[in-house]
Image (cartoon, rainbow, N blue to C red; front, side, top):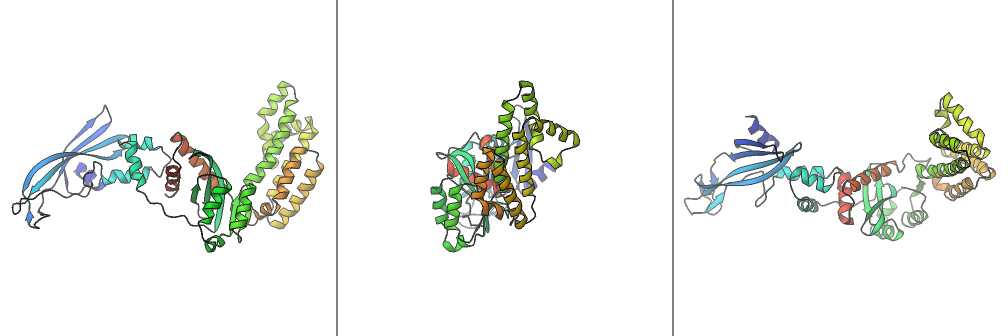
Amino acid sequence: MLSNYYIGEILGIKDANIIKIEHDDKIGSLHIYFELERNIYECPRCKELTMEVHDYRWQEIKGPPIGHIKLLLHYHKRRYGCPHCGKRFYEPNNFVPRYHRMTYSLEAFILEELHSNHAVKSIANRCNVSVFTINRIFDFISLPKAKLPRVLSIDEFRGNTGGEKFQCILADPKNHKVVDILPGRTSHYLTEYFRSFSKKEREKVEIVIMDMTRYYKNIVECYFPNAMIVADKFHYTRLVYWAFDKVRKEVQKSLHPQRRKYFKRSKSLLWKHRSKLNQEELDAVEVMLSISPKLSNAYLLKERFLEFLAAEDVSEAKKRLGFWFALADSCGLQEFYTCRETLFEWLTPVLNSFKTPYTNGFTEGCNNKIKVLKRNAYGYRNYHRFRSRILYMFAA
């Protein structure tokens, strides 16, 4: 009874009678032999009713795996014979398409697995089918045409596919959706893509979030006239940390090997926000800063920048950033002067980041999942399949 329930409710095979069940420990497979209940059917030729069985045939069908156990269904298939016109036909069923050797439930299982970041080969091995079969099923999926969201995020990731090293990802950070994946990150691909949307659609975009790539800004200004350009907080904060770390490494190189090793091991204390340090950690930081006035100045600039990030509104942020600019101009550190020039060039998009709660955080999270997908598959040569897999993975 339990076997009949499993095959009927879980595998979707109605009115099945189990003949026997075998388990093959060598290859880790489960074999279920069954047949459907005998019934009265209409002849497809003359439309007369018949329940006369002409013969039986065994058909091996692949079902969805049970954990790591491969499932093989052995279907004792009846062929009916019409006594009125002589037509022979197989009994209809609801679990396997005609001329197929896998159940509907296995196809559904494969499509569900493709929502994950597992490699196609891994899914094929688990489902006891070929990679070609997985790709054939996946190629039948029709993905909807992308629509531009109200809030658009632009970023890139290293995909190494279709002859391009980097691909561009467009996302909707408000609704947590991936909009599309472009073949490359250059202005040519972005321009060609945004041109495919009407002016009316592009005018509906209100906010565009990006890293500080100049041609991204130029393209957005051209194609999204109503959009507010926002510099992503993570990316411009990283500039300050990079400048600070260059100073730290320079000071570290000038030290005795023993002290150099201590500096390297304790660098996380210098990166950490001062307010989050305990007394013991504060003492350790003070010892390191006392070694070099240059490092002490760089640390002060880093801390003041974190105070700027904590501003509650645009007005306060503007004041604190102005103070930080003055500090960077007078510190005598080339690393921070270069950083100050970049931030000043992007002043309006940087301050705009305090007008909206949206960042590229969701997009960066997507990039990490894409990296896992790519690593599991040992890379993708075909851009179109890579794009489709990413969009399908995030459509779940």
